[in-house]
Length: 637
Image (tube, rainbow, N blue to C red):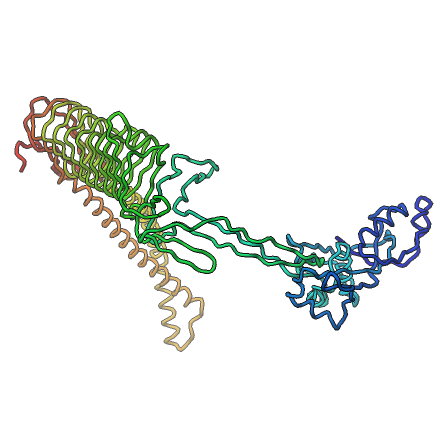
């Protein structure tokens, strides 16, 4: 909002505005400036926005108690208004009476500054922003103009003048100093106009069950995945499982209008009179009481007693009974799921189960995910389920399994990715591992290994036996990284060789001139003359060129050594192919594909078995550079 310099020149009479020209300035005493302006606007039939006023004087009165007489604030009693205890007396009343002169704004009034006033929620603080202005001119009365305008603005809102604004004079002086020095105000300037007593709201007591934090958690779209609402929650030692926030009364305040701000009493509604076991520690300070887990496990509640157990037995994990259970793999927790009816799911569809150890006596449902360090599945896994565990045992597998040491009784079309995999019987499906051991292999399977595939009894056809280190878990990413590094290294070598070629041509071109310049410098020095700077610079430039050429040769050497190291790393991985074995203790059936995959160069060597072949061990041997052949031997070696 702008405020103005007032012109005192007489305006010519406008026949269409006779009422305004006949208006005489009015001086009134009032406690409500806004209302007074509205009254004049109404009675004189003048638009409200054409009226303005000057503050002539302000009188502040108060009474400390409701039965007291009104007293005027003066130099003898004003200090007590700086005392917070005095201001927070609920019976204290404060008001101001203003003497103002009301007049009609003149058409020639022009804005000097834009001033914005802002306040907080309770009107206990008012901040003025004097907007930057490159056109303002310094004058001796500029400070008072700013203060007057702010006072007029806040007086219209019944804010107490001069009562809680002790710093305003100093802050406005800083603005004037900037204008005096710079000739303008190059940035917005903020300062506090009024600051009284802020109320402090009460804190109601609160009971927070932190161990239930996964209940009704929303996703990024704001939707709740109710399958993960987690009726059963795992915690780690040191976790806060329950927190009680103590109720705390607030503090009354008073705003810049002088109004008393009363806050309500704090509410107490929660009961924490429950029992805890020795596995939970109670800690208390002035603000809260917390209950902390002393061990990893699951929070149990029986009656009014809370406990933590590292072993949990459940009939099932399902949407209705438990929701997903996700404990950190490092919590040393164990879950035993006892449902073993082959017509039911022990772990229901879409459920997630995560714990250090998990034993499932029955089946894993569709879309379920099980994660553990050690897991045992007594039933069968659904084709859309996923099991992850370092040590893993499965009865009948149809889904996806990943781990280190995996032992499966029967695979029926399932997929396995691991390190050492042992299977009693396999009918369809895929295994990718360093070592694969199968007692009975039927038909339509894919076996991919880096070291060993060993079959006790082959009963079917159309199986694939593949030795390919690049497919093995953990090795695949390493090979890709090495190949990318090799590609980048080859590009660097080519770029360096091109630069060496270019610098060599320049050296050969400038060699003879450089020799001549050097000889000339020697002759001049022999004659006691100082060689020209231009000649010395030419020799220095030539030497710099030779040094750069030598550094490029050294760089090329290092890049070639780096390539050699990368190639050796790839060859070390590839050497596993030459050391790998495929062993079949029984007679071969027909249409089984044997394949060895080399990395560098990328070569695939294949062989298809015939019915009745008796060779026991299959390996790959190197005949000569980049030439390999499959070896079939009747002995294990």
